[in-house]
Length: 384
Figure 1 (cartoon, rainbow, N blue to C red):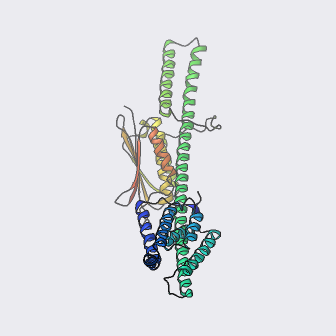
Figure 2 (tube, rainbow, N blue to C red):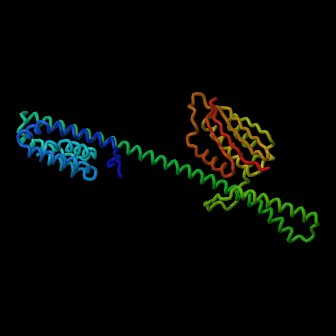
Figure 3 (cartoon, helix red, strand yellow):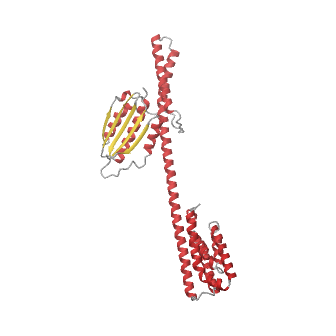
């Protein structure tokens, strides 16, 4: 449904006050004639009342047949004063559609009906010019009010459509960011597993073709194969369930970063002019490769956000943890002076980090503290 055709659902109160207004308009327009009918021709009074009730019933269908109901109530209003209320509401309803090819005929029929009713009304003593002036003014008010209501409904419907579109686009961007992060993780796992499987293949081939190995060399080679296979299975378990559709990821790229590369990442950020301080509670060489890569990506994205949103502030990177307790990564920086306390605008990088951390079995949180600092904290599982 287009915005111009939008018709909101009416509540019980909306029906009640519309009915009350129709009764008031009918009472005001029919009162003078009704008194004369009651005193001189009660059959006409009954017919007029029956026609009015019929119009009250017909106006309930104004949304299904707006033009038809408006023409019917205004035409029949030429011989019934009690039908004036439904005729006005039907005219307003047509005007909400803001289509002049519908409004003009209804307005002309309404004016003609008023002239006919004036000519057959024996109780009126008002001059025709005054009556026409009042009727034209009433029609203009009804049409203007209806067009205002229609314009407001169209505006609300348009805003609602834009909000729904923006929400769906944001959801699509978030889903795209999650998919990209999963693909990135899959690529990293591909490179790591390719390395480990190649080691297993090489040492297994050595055992097959080398017949001059001593028992000690065979045992060492078997230990290497066992250790590499165990690490490969551990890496594969972390990425189980992550699907990748990119066809161009078959060739391994450069070695994927780990926690050992964090000092290099910090130095690279300092080389670009950032003021970065790193503290850690345990040598990064002890961190397993899987969670080390995740920690590297978290710090990398946090530094990127700080570079974009607070380039002149001190960024503190804290990486600490121990086996069995997990690895805690915290990156914080004060907001720029005069900047409002808001989160980064796009947030897609943070969405990707949240997805990566959740896939690793951890959790990630980002917020603006009461001290005016933006903090990004993550916890990653570190098996004992």
